[in-house]
Amino acid sequence: MAAIPVVDFALFVEDKAGTDIARKRLESLATINKACREFGLFQVINHGLDSLLLSKVLQNAHSFFELPLEYKCKFSTPNNGMGFVHGSGAKGGPPDRKEHFMFAAEDKSTLWPDLVPSFRSSRRNCFDKNEDYFNFLHYPGCSDYQGQVLAPHQDGTIFTIVSQLNRVPGYQVLKDGTWHLVVPVENSLIINLGDIIQEEYLKLRFENKRLGNNFEKNITIDYYLVD
Image (cartoon, rainbow, N blue to C red; front, side, top):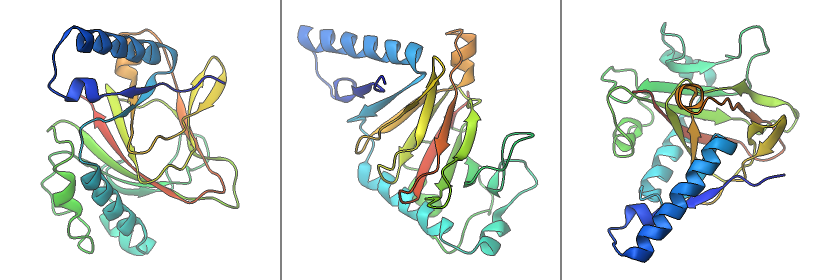
């Protein structure tokens, strides 16, 4: 089974010059191009984002998802997919075994969990663009269930950036009829191409899903770039 490419982004984050650096950057860009065309996603390390800050935001999300369902449902909204959502799934299929809390990057409503005071402030220092969205997702460990916790799908985005609380496996991408497991690298980000780039520019289509397993539950932040 082919391995999902891992790209060291330090070459692009660090302010360095020189022929050797330029050559290595071109090599990394070629790796990214190949990964996008073969898998529709790749992982990046040394991305320049504050790992401690990302960890804090993920821990805040973990604290929220630990709360009783009745309390979390107070943050549901009439806007489909926004706020707190559980029991959703693909049309005509079984509900996904996950829950999420999604909001616009520049959301100014009062729809915020008051038991997690740094939930709002900490996330603003990670990614922030008016038209885009954050989605905090909780994937249960599912020790009694070996099926999917998130059905096969494409993200309706330009691309999605995924940060995980821990290195729990489960995220998969479909390539040539085979599902390939993304083995998380410590302090990495998953860059997943959305259908806007896949279909309009690359003329390709990749799907991804997440499986349940006997491992511990996992929390992710998904940042959806849509404009």
